[in-house]
Amino acid sequence: MKNSIQLICLSAAIVAGTATVSIAQEVKHDSKPSFEQLDANGDGQISPAEMAMHRQERFAKADTNGDGMLNEDELIARMQSRMAKRVANMIEQHDTNGDGVISAEEMQGGNGGRMFAMADADDDGTISKAEFDAMKKGHGMRMHKNGMGKHKDEKSAE
Image (cartoon, rainbow, N blue to C red; front, side, top):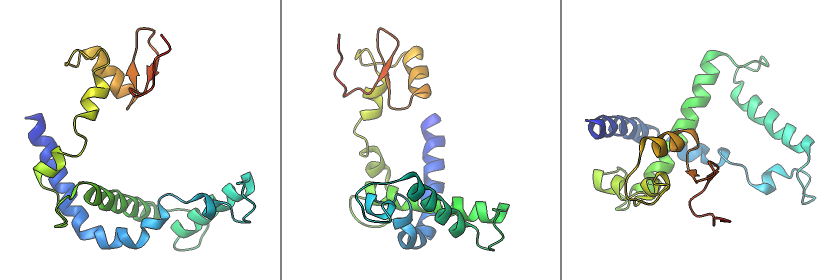
């Protein structure tokens, strides 16, 4: 049942995303700026002023009516743009046959069981309630005997 609900939600996201892929590809460069984009003066270092300038540019781009404030429509448009980028990236990552859509098989092959392995902190092949709760709290983190979270690929100092 849970898998069916997830598959339905994923299908809906894919259908919505397919319509916005072209928009996402146009604005994809905006999602994560490069070091060079943030280093506005080209001195090889990013200053707080350069970070502030970058934030202001992003704000100004979202402020489509130029009033210095973000209203509901502007925020929705910004979120839709970000979602379109995520969907385009998802299709790019999982669409192994290049047909522009993701099949159930392509989706299943995406993480190769990494998420399960990350949640299975004691490597017993199952996920306990405690491991599940720990995974929800610190996505991508594993809980160890001392209760401290670590990424699974980090070597333990024990």
